[in-house]
Length: 117
Image 1 (spheres, rainbow, N blue to C red):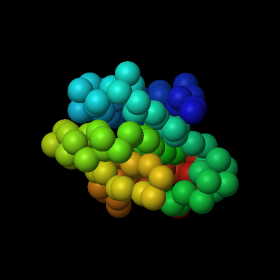
Image 2: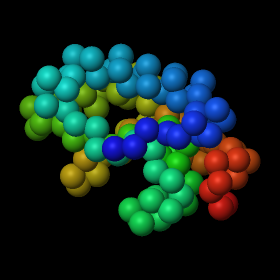
Image 3: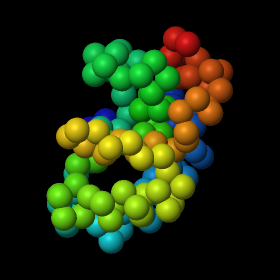
Image 4: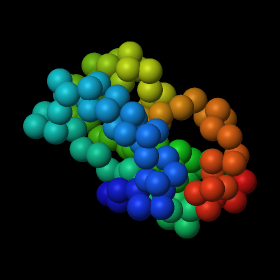
């Protein structure tokens, strides 16, 4: 798992910190000691393309994570994340969590991060 590089943090650090705080608060009861694993955080545009990510994936801004939960905590953790105001997408093998609803971040933010839009 890769943390956002300094150039991305300098652009979106306030957003990233708010996102991280929301995730930490929502997942505290389901923490890593309960078996939750973050499997993806920041992705460069080239890594995102290699992973088959969406063109405007919030992973490229450090505003999305993929989490794997044990079956016994997954449903409760998803409810907690949604109550925290995060966007949650259940995938076959993980839960994708992003800070904002798709399409709400201006293209200029992606361009500033080096993403072609």
